[in-house]
Image 1 (cartoon, rainbow, N blue to C red):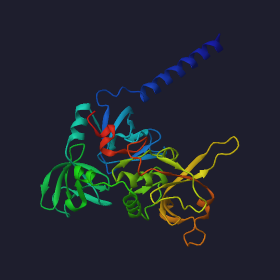
Image 2 (cartoon, rainbow, N blue to C red):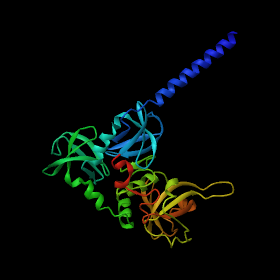
Image 3 (cartoon, rainbow, N blue to C red):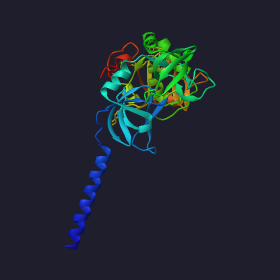
Image 4 (cartoon, helix red, strand yellow):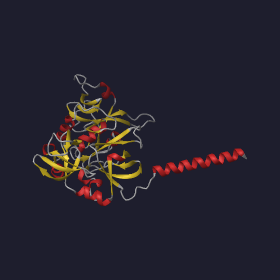
Length: 328
């Protein structure tokens, strides 16, 4: 009897703990089912804890969907990624509030690194750092500065030379080989960061994602999803049929009983060379005669895709047409 009673108590205790854990992880979100990133680069993790792995990042001003909250928020980003962000890095919003944000006139930060200031003077108090791809609400202009507003209502001044009205910026994007490669090269030397999708650090797919985003297009987040977009190519041994701007993939080819495994991606720039993030963003070559020959990646090369002329198809969406950037 004592043993049975003890088992019952243990079972009830376990069920109570499980119920509490479910309550913690499945807290009702309420009317604020959307949010906007409120720091220059929001770090999104695999779980609601700073000790969990960095999964991906989102930029200031990006709208997201809130799925759950538990001190942290589980969110869905515009590229469909779902994971956790700390409550201090996001501003929860109702549908009306997110629509107000989405429809407001904004400026897009175009310089790699900069600061926003409390007054229209570069020696005034810094409000925050900002990076390329960040978006802030436009309030007006003062001399050489935009007057802008953060998602949480903070106001600041940003040099006009470091940003551009979003509608003007997005209308001038050209998603072609020259622009995507030029943007990729502008990220040269930025350190590799697992989960990174900003000029502060990029992983391999985060590098490709960032190069595309800064040219007005949202791609899938991971290399294993990127290989599914556009047109899969049959690659010649000398790479002669590849075109600048094609994506090149690395990993393990499918073999007896094993599926293809994609673990790395880069952007082909021509002449048997590609730019990618491994250690840092740099250019490598498939040609053994080149000083930047990359035997390691040549040995794990598994294929390529052509995607630049497939905007609007699966996984390749213009920013302004992404559902989270529209009226919700």
